[in-house]
Image 1: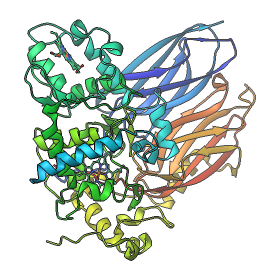
Image 2: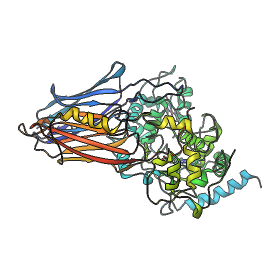
Image 3: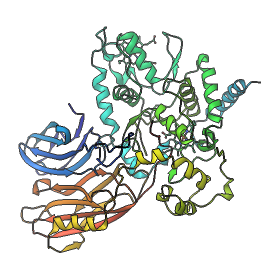
Image 4: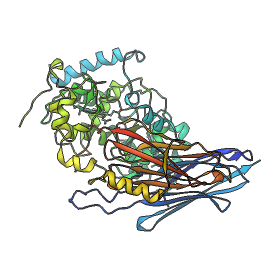
Length: 106
Length: 256
Length: 186
């Protein structure tokens, strides 16, 4: 299981705009670097990152090799209703990771 | 007087003057970084080293080895049992009477307490535990123990620190004492204090130990780096901690 | 083997002198700064050529044409206007491997008027794409932050696409310096 660090408030007022930050451990190998043997190290990146709030997509990002290793992404969201914010990362070599957090909206 | 004895005397003098920890001009490499990198280090929700801290926190409670014990089984809550520990190492391990650095101490518990294999140098597992333990000393002043069994090691370190080496024929002191604060190509030369280890170095795109950092400086001198298990690192680490006495731990740090 | 020592301070050549001769150390901060025997050290410490390969995030470069084409792919024939977008990126970074970047766009983020997407491009990495992010009124604010790799001193471009079909843009220049005392391939 991938190592993920997500930061989102546990509670929010309805209509409040909250900031959500997500970090994940990943090499983000560009596919343009020669290795010690002189041959190019194959690309191995996360390409897609998405977040849903109670199943509704609220954010999606397509990454390229220009995203730094151990990708960090932050975005905001309007607190709509209590429930689950779920995150999903997928990419090369069959990489998939998921994480979710609970949020209470009052 | 041999070089070593001279170094030992110098250390005594040096250490005494360092007792005035504040306002003596010593500073963490943190202060040589741009505001953007300082911010990256300060924000635990953005500092990539925190991914390793999290991994270390879960390793802390995992049972391992033939003893089937976790670190937590013996040490309990790390936030109290490990507070200030990273600020003291290298120190003498009571079991062996030998000096060890923090990584060495962790592996001593792995092998003699958990009856497990040691974790490899620079492995994610070792770095993660090191980062988790170091985090418990955040803000604590570096406090090398007053153990006389460490004196000769520190003297060796001080000696190495001042010795010119490599094709560049420079010593650590040439950069970190004589030219700290100046620029080497684009990079600021820091004073070289080990306040933030293990660090997430952008150059590595990963977490790495003080040994790895020292290896980089040795390679920078165009000298052959010592193997990971070499006594030279332990000596340099011990001396660097004495030299940084009183500076606050800011691990896990971000460095360029 | 040359075991030259750093030259005495006053006699130190300026970085700009080293720059023209040294492809690697040429990527450093411009302007006056104290240097340590810049030419000799710079070449010797930094041009450990094996290391040079490993520290480059990328080995080949995109072109300004590729950048323009990538932007065109997003905007089509719609006009691209300067404004509304803010690109917060440090003007000078110590290492191009992780450059913090925040894009924010002035927008009410309502159903009728919001930012649909933010696209970020660069000039000199091997590919012009950095990321595309898709937004909606559910975001409340059109702000996205991440960390990117920049292979060299270069231009970064952000383009925002609104629900009304408008495209707004801004660009920033980032100077990338090189970390010192890097490791060779071991």
